[in-house]
Image (cartoon, rainbow, N blue to C red; front, side, top):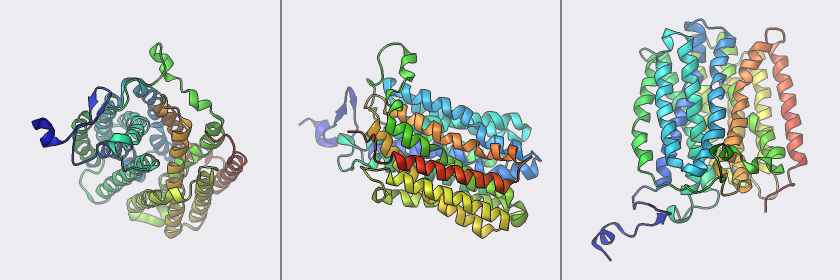
Length: 417
């Protein structure tokens, strides 16, 4: 054994890339990158009430701010995931960190006008899109084989979803607390995030690559095709459940606080922050035990999740009608349970359906469908000009019941070999 080997131990490799011997497993580094990107995507949510009350933006515009980042997120999910299947995870994830810094920088200029907020949210969407498609796949690949021999088959999905929810909760908590009690609340939360995000460019650069030869052959645009996206299990089970994940989240901790402004008074930002942290905190807490609910022979996990999220939206209606802060928090507990189960169950389904050549691509398609739910508050706010909010939300609850029934029909069908 050489001197180097005696000092550092043997160094396993993946392709031509060495996996450095380290005290911290490689997946932890990518986990942190996904965490910080998710932080940037959700730090805006508890600030909606602030922009509505202090900047005097309309309710519709404020909810457009919440949803506009889907315009950046959906293309990033679809393009970044597929391209990373061919060109590697590292370069795309580095682009995500850069996008996180740019997004928060633009949001920090928010006091100068709504255009900066729109642009900042757009870049925040690109950030989260890359993190979800590329980062989640990278975490999964680093949670197996020579990188982490002790990990079980579901470790990658659990770790990836936990990084997202904890990062989202942390971003909301820090931004909400600063907005309520800190100085320059329209600027400081975003500067804090920039300081947290920049070091992860170095962390990502030093993390071992796992995929350089996947994807489809031929011109680059053919890489955007995701063959497994047409799998019947994906279209009839996963895609049906997906929009409810962030649709229920947006209604629970994005839209609800604006409807309870009269009940919360000067504590509106505290409630908005609490609602976000409760939903995402409960989601994080339930994810480690989600494997007990999920099943290899049915969609039991997603059925349970959609039922919980639908019930949570029903409780939101009750909270609005009763103008009750306590009921609003209960609604977010129920929604959080559903989100946690749905994320883990959906990612496990995706990993079983996707071939080794398009894992990131299919992950991107899933998250694009899931994040479409963030448009719900903007749609509800627009329709609320002619229809009562409780009636709109009861219709949403009815759609949740229909979705649950559709998933039930295919629960035990089209299961991948």
